[in-house]
Length: 126
Ligand SMILES: N[C@@H](CCC(=O)N[C@@H](CS)C(=O)NCC(=O)O)C(=O)O
Image (cartoon, rainbow, N blue to C red; front, top):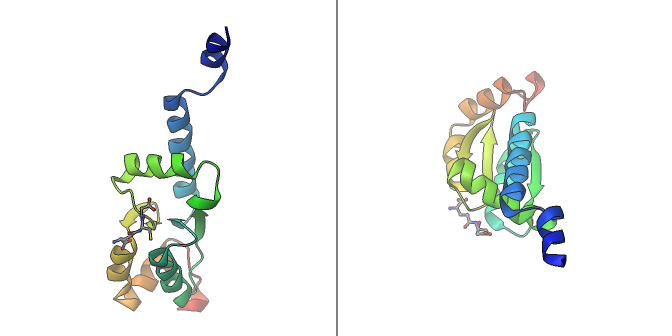
């Protein structure tokens, strides 16, 4: 009896992953710069430092501090093929991890221009 009850009323793994995928995609869509992170991760801290250095506005989702963090990480693997954090998006485009962001940021002018185009930095910051 309890088995039937659980089957009927608990989320199935696929329903959970669908919800996580929808949520991850919403975070990507609604933020000019989106960083999926873990608060203790040194690569994530470096990514935040790079973005802070140009005064970019960005949204961080700390996967290790959220109850759905593991589901979101699995959803990101499906969406991007990337399992590690940071997992960075600029203007809804998947950039990759910290080393990928470092490459993008190595040309500071182009990086700032890209951030300005997506609305992550204002004209004042240029
Ligand atoms: N080359 C990657 C390294 C990222 C990395 O190794 N991140 C670790 C956390 S510090 C990770 O995601 N480990 C697997 C996990 O936490 O699930 C980058 O530049 O972003």
